[in-house]
Image (cartoon, rainbow, N blue to C red; front, side):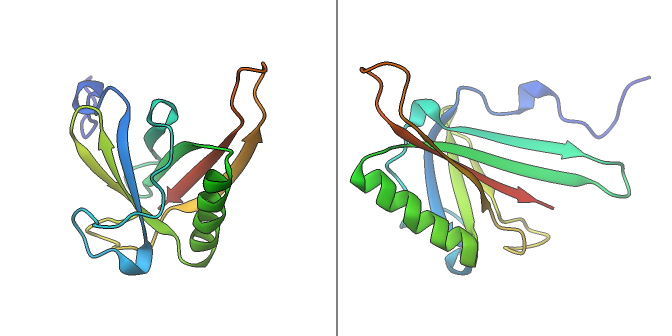
Length: 144
């Protein structure tokens, strides 16, 4: 019996994250923002995931955006600024995939910015070898 209402994996973007623009939820007006809170992330280490669970009467959608910043003074400052915005009002992320597709997380036509992305975790890593650069990994999440 075929399942209805499911998207095939071929319809999902492939190839990773090419760019992310983060906007405080109160300042997001739709479309592509002109200014961004964080740009200094490593594109090769960023990832976006959308997960749909629950039944037809109580669906649950989880958006997760993981970004890695260098643990430089600029990276720490960007992480601290983002943490403050995430705690106070949350952010909307405009994610450009390597395929060229643009996704918006933290905003929807139905709910607006009622469920913005919030900081779910921060991880500071020193690296495994002397050649590794220290990093800050930020996990942003929205559940509705």
